[in-house]
Amino acid sequence: MNAYLVLENGMIFEGRAIGYWPGLSDNGGSVGELVFTTGMTGYLETLTDPSYAGQIIMQTFPMIGNYGVIPADFEGKCFAKGYVVRELCDAPSNFRSEGRLDDFLKQQRIPGICGVDTRALTRLIRENGVMNACLCADLPTQSADISVMLEEIKAYKVENVVAEVSTKEILEFAAGSPIEASCNCAEDTVAPRTEVSPPRWLLSSSISSRFPEASGKLAHSADRRSPMETRFAGLPIGDASQQSKESRQQEVGEGQQLPWPRNGESCVGAGNPLHVVLIDYGAKRNIIRSLTERGCRVTVVPHDTPAEKILAMQPDGVMLSNGPGDPAENVFEVEQIAQLVGKLPVFGICLGHQLTALAMGGKTYKLKYGHRGANQPVTDGKRTWITTQNHGYTVDSDSMAGIASLSFRNANDFSCEGLDYPGKRCFTVQFHPEACAGPRDTGFLFDRFLRMMRGEEG
Image (cartoon, rainbow, N blue to C red; front, top):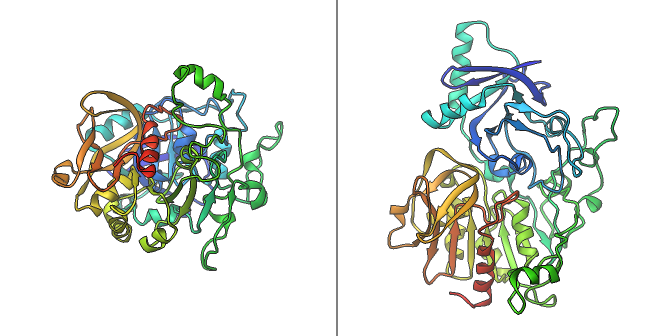
């Protein structure tokens, strides 16, 4: 089946349909903001990153899907509006694979297209900036209809997506609990090919078996979605890192302090773990994992949780997650952050970084084509780290003068990548120190957050 990618400037790219297409022709196709990501691996983490809500993802790497679908690598639920690749591998080969990427896209109701010139598309976006696009199965036959279609594409905006991707209930994660990310699998699944057994991620199951590591859920209002319908449902327990404490001790040297615990080794004592409240603006699973593996107890709260309710939980610190969309439209969330900063340690990532800057009186603006990929260099002036990033907005460094100190800067375009707020026990970064599938060069920032919560760092 043929498919078309129509850009807001009128350019049309023809390819082959992949993923989910039923009903799209009747609805005029799937419209979203077309963005590109440069990661050579990690396509599963990209597809299941809630920060891509409202966007059509284009992979610049030419072949995608060659290691199949691996539920342990999921970061959440798919909220993308579409998927664009040069070549889709139909015969994955990996011992961890549990299915084909095309079947996964169908199950998640994500339309896609392959066989298009993604290199030409990438150059077009680099030169002209991100633009809206539409994935459709049919093209209008009349010029007047084409004009109407283009106007509808141009009018599209990514709006109110934080409320869409955030949890609707409060969830608890115990210190040291292994967390294997998965997707919220819908009950109406797509049958796989007959010669193989249905992959585990296509099978429905009860909430108790799909999300056993979440305990002590607090009551939520009747008008909110049930646990089965939330992005957090369907996160099966998986094996944590198999690296032993002894082997890690050999890595760092005898007598040296281990950088962080794994396999549930608590760095603060199992009987008295640090308590972190994670405000979910579209949190990736590995943020929770990065905290629990360091011995923290994590409470995940909705994006619109009032500051007084968070303070009443008496946490040791607050984590502000990543998320999609324009940070400036989250007025209520910004107001709550302003009430939290200075009262307890705060660590913000990606959207959390931007919202904190707005809460402190700074400004944000939209980048030409954003930073998306696993090869983004950031520098503190002395050393450069390679980081994973996914954002289309950034903090205006000049607007933070006298408010915060610049801790990291992008080594390519010199945009703001990190801020410290002296005397407020607060620091934020634009990149992802928890990144899966890596690189993990900046994971030490979680250790800094722990030291701040223990009072070892101001």
